[in-house]
Length: 388
Image (cartoon, rainbow, N blue to C red; front, side, top):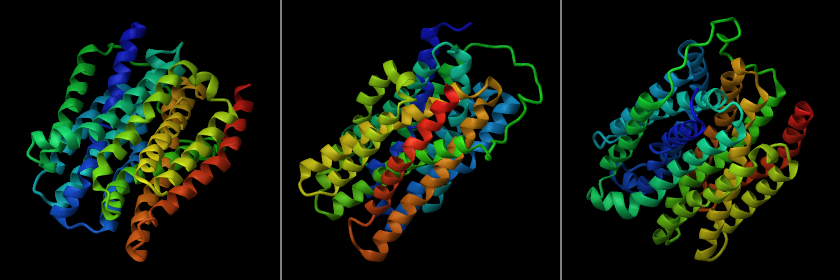
């Protein structure tokens, strides 16, 4: 039996590995843009590619978990994420950039449905807290590339965006090694018809509601990371890129730490979701409002409220599912969520290219937040009635 402290540390590291290589891209988008002469639509595709894989490969992750186990799937995903990140920098080449992004995103897509089953396996008595722990690691994994790439990593690597991808691949490979060395060796569960099931039950309306709720937050988050650098550059404020990306990602930490203590209670509270949705909408409006200070305030507010929704929704699968179905519910949630998220960066880029209006990319993000606010009560009330 794994000790709670060891379980939480390993889950935290696994969570960090989910985002280190993905969030290494936004800080170097202006450099990639200049070197490879990408259009805004192409930038939207680059930002949307991970979501395509997160959606399309989540079910493949569920199948891998059913056949090989959640821990093996996690190790495979970490390895693919590290290798793919290195491949992105070969060239510079548009083809290798996209191919490496696909490999990296496939690895993350495999990892994501593996963590809720590991939460149930390693921390069965504190699943809400364990989910908040690995989500805290995920958020730290988002903050580090956003906060360190521009002021530290790029100067260290002579402003090479290619080598910056290799730089962030190293800790992901190290996390895989640590997990391989220190994770518990458990006997495989008896193989039954239930444990071998891997296809999510898409007839379950709760999976759709959870997936759509998470989709609004994920779509807006990745679209913000993808378009903030070019938006600020086009509006004559490139000096705000580092501060805005850092605020967006660092702003997530207060909510993450707060929910370490209250996730299991807040997950069933309708006002938690409504308040977070309203705060997210206010954050976007502040970003596009007048004044440089409001950009930083808006990104920080959105990051905090968006992170709260993320933690609450990710806590649901291990709480509402029997052990043999956690990976299926998780995979279904991620498939629906990222199927929604994939179109938003592309639509944002197309709107910008077609209209030439710098505020155009934010229109789909505002719509996502309105959907979040409208859907939140039905999701929470449905879950509450099931959980009662």
